[in-house]
Length: 283
Image (cartoon, rainbow, N blue to C red; front, side):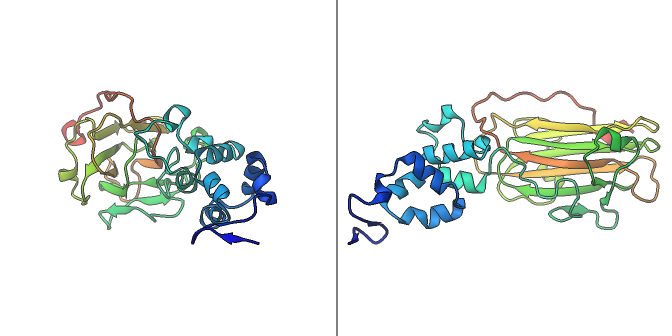
């Protein structure tokens, strides 16, 4: 007969079949259940199951079994007392080592992005010609017009940021990626958000392309590390335009906007190389 020990858990007799199963067998059984159900329901079956669900070893074993070990902290960080890991939450939410940007290449139109100005905003196109050959898996990308267009994305702290960019052969173009770790509320005033210099909390990449340059896809990327402590949001801004001032969207192209939180908290800050001066000073 079952005996109620407390409000949450019900333990049966000591010879209960479930209790005598080895952990390895219980792990295999629990692996068939959705992770959310496991946390919400199975953790209430008995104290032993609750201990398993809360243990780091179960989630590490499950991540290995599902070939997604990278979503959990590396071995050298698991037992570090300064990190208070919730392994079940990390397994379910998977905030690390994946792209946090939704709709990175415009496959859902402009959903998730804010484009300015609204009259000459970024458009979505299917790249073709030589660009298709250099990036064969790409189905859509953003393309700017003769007027400087911007798109923004807001999200929580990050380490690695990147975006692919390109251009037409017959039109001179300008492209810039600006990313800033911002402490506090973010507004859309780019002058207040950017210092236009690379430092521990700001990354600025700019590229000016002349007419008749063979188009290729290039990646602007940066790893933030060694930045000051604090609660950060990320201001992610892409700027693009064509320098021929043609009516329509003939400016720079961009896709695969990426933000990935990595398990690299203690690496020293790597300085960013020098990039071209502001487009206004170059034209």
